[in-house]
Length: 493
Figure 1 (cartoon, rainbow, N blue to C red):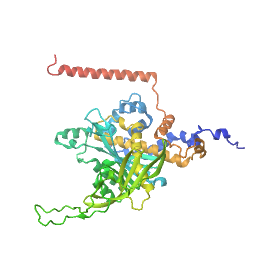
Figure 2: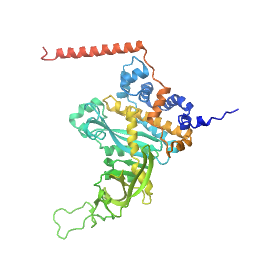
Figure 3: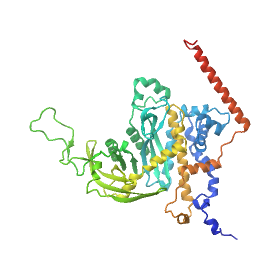
Figure 4: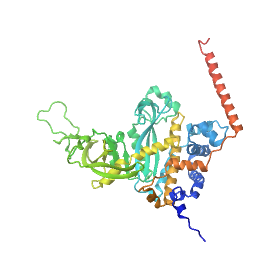
């Protein structure tokens, strides 16, 4: 005889099964990570060595440790209490395994689920990490968006994939400032292992290189969204349009647009020509272009409020205006959407899109706001999977750290997707909590569950004592070596 669950039990808010988190799914999470790892372990083999063991240890360190994810700590916490991290450091900094191998494997896995084959968006964005000095590959005084100023930083250009409950990095490139390619930096490039074939490329060029890569690899996405660093580039918008990629590209408020189609071509000859005959095409129309911010003041630019999505802070429901405009890019006239958002009733932001003329305004408003998930992807990679804790200087270490960070974030995103499709939430929760949309499972939530089912081993008092003594001995030897070097230095008395 089956005894029905009491109303008191079924209505309890702390019943995990009602939230799509049955105990059997949680208990199986460790096995799920091991099975996930088996699919990728072959990516870490070279002609002479199988480094899969180091990769597995590093991935566990990213997923299971909360802070201090450097080579030595990972080795001690995950592998052996006496570990010094040198094997992990060699694996990350010097081992020749190709970082693109696991990255492209992730892209193929994203292509497989039916739920991700339509409606996905690629998010192009950069992210910087502050550095103490200029010795790391690509480090230099450059704009750090997180700090909002010029600072000693290392900057990466990233692609993230977004669809519903899934957001994850899918590719990245380390930006090397132009001074890294001067003759004075030749020795430094060799020291950190910058490939000899690497040449200076702007962030925009790196972004386009990655977009071509994911398109070639068959990653399914229906649009590209980027901020105004990339959107202001007429060259990049032209490249995306020519490649058949729909884009929603943020642009500065002073971006010039035409409200009527301009005539564009070679200027007519002057009656009394002087000097060189102009050959470059130019706008010939009587109506001049106007800055995007002036379009908001036109009576022909009506604003309508659209509800874009529900958030934990409430409904995202701002006024938007959309109108067809023309721009000049790569010496050609292009017809685009100008999408204007009045954010929180305060500032206006602008974007250009090559979406078809019959695109629904609701769709344009949604695309205008989707870049939020690029920030979510950056934040999760840094705060949850240790992206900003890398302590290595070499170019290859940055690429390898990227590959394993992408593995970590994809495992969590895939877990969220599979659980959402397999374990339905109790529909009565929305009524009980009086919410139309319940909060999604976060990256931090999945990590907390994983840490519970795969706890890292704790040191015994004897192991901890040996580790402390070893640390003291190593510090003493380092101090002695520095003192001896000082005494041998010329002029020492």
